[in-house]
Image (spheres, protein in one colour):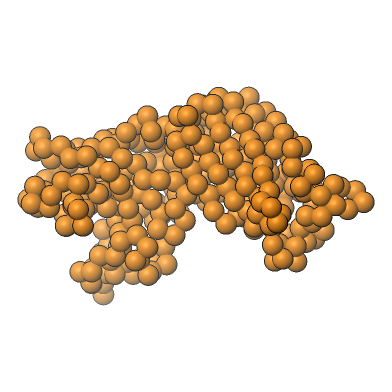
Length: 301
Ligand SMILES: [Zn+2]
């Protein structure tokens, strides 16, 4: 029988930016200290799909405040004392044989924090930065749904669809997604394997090449996205549990249906919080990489 696992409980999926919790582990890191609490509002960078950057902020114990400059994912196999951090984690995300932690990173020396285990910590996330990241992340999801719709007639075979029923170009072709305080950049691979799956990049009798369609593509994605923002639909994150690795689903009711996608990030609560969104689309020189940038007017520029 393994010991019960005490993975970090996270409150950021419901929008929290502060809280109090017990310090459960403190350990030295190169150039500072790692601090784990039982519960946290800090969103850590995901070790396998690092789309949304970590929250920053402060952590205060017994009146002593340290700056939290990063938050990373930590994991240790149940029964083992070895804590793996970030990319060194070998386990599959959410593996039940492992405990999963949010590790708050501070420059403060280990010696200043080592007596904090068992004490109450006050955790405070930089809420302005979080709001910008949330706006960028929500806009990024909407862009994906609008992009899937705009590209839907370029498929000769019908692959798996998104929750609005369009071929899921985003899920099939995405290679990286970077969410920033001032917007997001998503990169898609238009290689042989995508064409094999039935996606058409070249011109056909019915449609121009993707390169020629690019300005219209960006326009139609932006138009659809701003139409959705105009409905001021509610956005929520449905969590299947309280822990860092509990599956979570982003949900937004749009006029075309309910948009849902699995997501570990943070989001606005209503679409009007995005203001107006600008979208650009670019193809690289050999036409095998499509880059979309999505910029909400409410994000930090
Ligand atoms: Zn997401």
